[in-house]
Length: 464
View 1 (cartoon, rainbow, N blue to C red):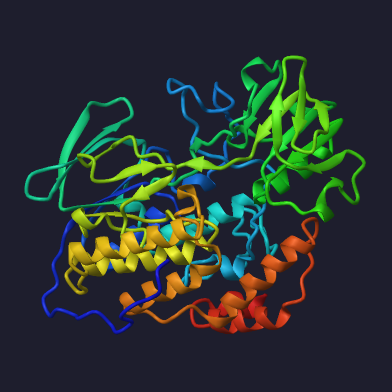
View 2 (cartoon, helix red, strand yellow):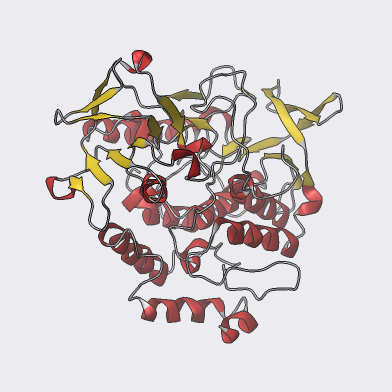
């Protein structure tokens, strides 16, 4: 992010404009975008290729025919969840700002997960609660894939969609909000010699359970949350698990405490025809499987902008504040691109900003000013040596970004307890990767969060 500029509220216009808006995707980003657009008085249609809301939080045991996701002809599976996944954020932090992720009682039909770091099914239940609470379901066209979003003369958009088993349909919209997620198109590590290596490769997108790795020697590449979880998951059944990652120190190398079969290594130097994999420290392992926990590529195969928006080494650009291409703002926007963030509140603030801009309640800078801001941001990344693929990695700057959005959409700034709780959890995660979900010492912050939640869910909070 470039330094925040002009924190005064944007001007409000007395006459609001209602637009016909297409939202692509009914995951968390699409659901909150639909709600905010509806609140602002826009007409909204949400396109969802699946049969329910929830996006990446809809678990399926199905995996793709190509385990590394490289074959463009493969039948794409859109979930990347593994069976054992629990959130790596506490529920107090994770929820939307005005619809907290509080513990819900079983309703006789659905068993709820009361843990502070619940399993993935509880997050899906939360998103379904959100959908029901705000009547979003009636806006969603399920089992409907968007095949093409094309820019038309006059600034409108033609959206071609196809419901399963039916012919395609073309419709015209004033604006399009892209919320199709970014956990579908795998990124694969580039390993010298991999084509001759005889073992099996898989991307974490197609990992579900550890059993297929029983008694095997597995090399896992990556150091993010999924890599930490999956390496521990597999270590319960595998003969050996060797984790290769960039972000390591000498203190973390070698056999891991509490395990007889889990090692941390430097990155892979090469893979060889005899089945060996050599690490940069010259240590070699004969492995059965290489599992890539190496992230995903942004992918918008339906979007045609005549080259205005491109994806270059996972930089979606040019985008003003990670949301608007200056030449097409505010009629085309993206929600949920930033990563290493608390995603739900960030998507909520982005959506409020988009909705207000489309109704002419707020103003954007000129196209030239937005491009200047984008170029200054890109220059700052270049000077700091940050690769393009980290353009949307906010990390430590996420709360500055959230607060910039809050100011420009007429909202309150991020709650101090939320910032402190996120920081505390991040530290515990690094220090106690095995136990941080079940042991904590920030009870004072939990109390502050529950006091905040009282105005939204007094019954649930008082019954905890």
